[in-house]
Length: 403
Image (tube, rainbow, N blue to C red; front, side, top):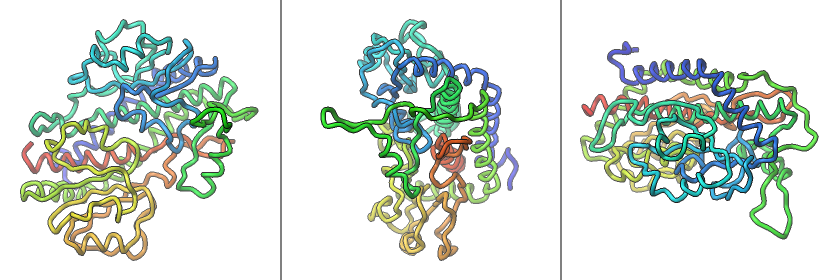
């Protein structure tokens, strides 16, 4: 492994480690954030991810280890105990005064909890409208630029994802200590999940869509200590960071593949399976962004376009088990494939000059924090894991391109 001074991927991952340590230092703030949110939910409020955030409703909704009973992003709050969970768009480009969704939210009775910094909403509304902040990275925190896109290696996505879920975990813990257990999604990649999840859906023939309540009825869970859920989540992501550090040579080669393809005018195509990409990368940059993204799909035959040709590069950070014949189909076609799955490398996937297999060991089923007495784990880890891997590769590409 090269030193941090000469390996951009290691430089990024080392800085990410510093961010995780800072989040640990900020645990008292995240505990207070989650506890304040829980007080309103325990008083009968509804929780919803604000549609002001173009990617956060997808990241926070329908997630294994997340809450089943949240309202949709277009929910119209009616109570002062309703909780709007807001991740602020990039304040360098977001014009709050012309955002009708934000104006409606400010005028509503909902409490607004911000996954971000006070500076991100400075002047956007009276300060008293914001109940709490998770803090995090500035939008220009990182390095590398391509045209008007800066930074290419950004820390904001990682901090938004990790601080958002750590705070949510502390909110869940505070609800448990308050005597109510939120209903948590079980991953549909695990057997029995469809039936288990459907059992909590409240169905009638008078209104649609149908949803689950926020809390279980008559379900006792031993209360976790304040900070325990967030701390376990940070531990899990830190372990993934360490695994990636041990693969610095693979990350370096992956970044060079991307740069070589870009210089040769070949396609650089990526799919990061989950709920945040590519929306979190501000996709309205369009063709200016140096990587072409496809929608989330774990099946390699569907995820990558058939039009990829020899010399193109595909990054696919997947979700489900990978069939050996699917890998073989792409690499023998001459497409350079950078791939991972939490299920590990299936027997039959052979080494190939066009294959980089990354070990990215988030748990199958995604959720990563055990809660004694409850049947499913809490808090998804895939978005943070994919973010660490993607920006480590991007750091190498940026270096190679001289960006």
